[in-house]
Amino acid sequence: MNMRKVTSLTALTSFVLLMVTSVILYIVPSGRVAYWAGYRLWSLSKEDWGAVHINLGFLLLISILLHVYYNWTPMISYMKDKSKKMKVFTPDFNVSLVVTLIVFFGTLAGLPPMSSIIHLGEAITDKANLVYGEPPYGHAELSPFRDFTDKVKVDLEESLAALAQAGISVKSPESTMKEIADSSGTTPQRIFDIIKPNQELTSGAEMPEEAPGGMGNRTVLQICKMYQLDLKSVLAGLSEEGIVVEETQTMKAIASVNSIDPHAVYKAIYTLQK
Image 1 (tube, helix red, strand yellow):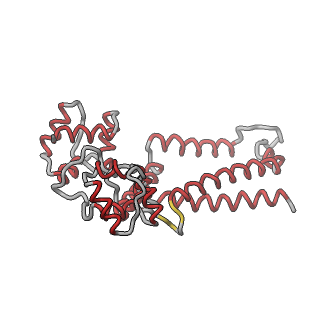
Image 2 (tube, rainbow, N blue to C red):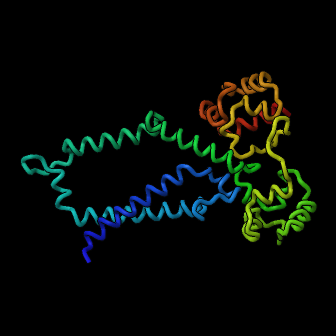
Image 3 (cartoon, rainbow, N blue to C red):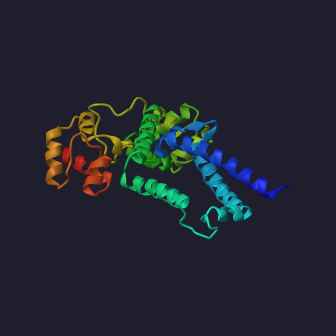
């Protein structure tokens, strides 16, 4: 067995598989939606794909380090000039370093084409979120059943009875939505459908105190239409609170411009409508 060949082939296969998992994690729904709806791809959850991605990354790192060790001599030759003298900053190395730094700092600065790649991923994720459905609030699957029913304003005893009728056993109201779903072979989303069917956010719905999942990607205009709020009053009220805002900006964009948390923007709108 040739360790140099094994190392090189391991680096290659782990790299290919790492790219596959990267693409998958690039297109899957956001965590709150994936865990809520029980999202799976090829029988693996988003959490499974994330774990595989991390370990493949470690395998690639180890194999690359071994690859450098076994190929140290040719690697060193890449850093020598025409007179065979050692020179780290050769023209080839400089080009590779500049390209890497452009991608690194360009991503942080939000410059294209790096920003375009990020925005495309966000658009794909947002579309997937709509397909699979948002939870009533972020990571609702982790809430104890008692707390969940209180937050979505449904009766606890009636909810337990409805689930029992549907063949879903709840050991304790303190069990989380995820624990109940896992033990019954279903999803938190399905449990919510049973205890509170047909409760999608629609125009005229009452604005909840806690921001529902995905609200950060909604604009002020969309939120006002959703909850039948007066747009001019909301904009004026936010302005009085010192929050600079435009009706077509998303909660995330407003938060970024004003250096605050998106939940603070939502909370301000909720307070105004109250």
